[in-house]
Image (cartoon, rainbow, N blue to C red; front, side, top):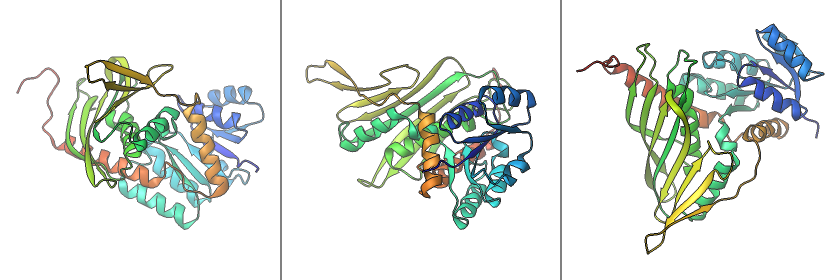
Length: 329
């Protein structure tokens, strides 16, 4: 089957990784960005690709079947809508949009025109995450009791959105996927603006995951930070039999299963999974969806619930009295 040709819009810190993967898959036709110097470097690195600063020229290009958007999140909706209306399949980095109504509109346009709309929820394609999903489904952990995701680092490049819009889409999409929960609900939220610039840079969410299987609600928590000098990317899933820990800061043996013997001795097992790059698998999945017409694993519905939660959380945080860092009440 001949691979569909794609254009990558935006080749910054993350976009260049998409450029690399689609080029290696033999599907990259065009790269579009406002930075002409960056375009020149990419044209030299990936021989045969075309570069342009004109987004409209990409939409007019008949060779381009799909558009991959890796621009700032406040541009996602407008670029994705314009691409869909031009008849292009679309892959958008997370979040799909900043408003649930915009997510619904994009999904509606894609469905009406029989186009693929996929969101870059990378962890749904992570081999260790999918191995953990199989472990959960097998019952090896027992009945699930609690799930927590910690995602922390030191971010010098603060943008105009909070730490939650930056990091929590990964946590929420991954946890919902693992638990087969379409509509997580936030029960409590906390957030702090430690730099006094109106950007929440430390936050937590207490989340309920209604799970249809067993008619249960699994409690969980998301913790995000931009001010932690020690990077932490860790998911913990507690069960009645075993606890799974997925530590994505490790280079190998990221997924371990922990259990206690009757004598009180802790047993740690390593769960094997394929050593494949998640982004490569995600890009490959997008091309397959474009070729076959199947709905992506990380579709607009998955993105809708993530955006819905974050919009609700943002409204709650905005409504709270602002406390200056270091002040006392």
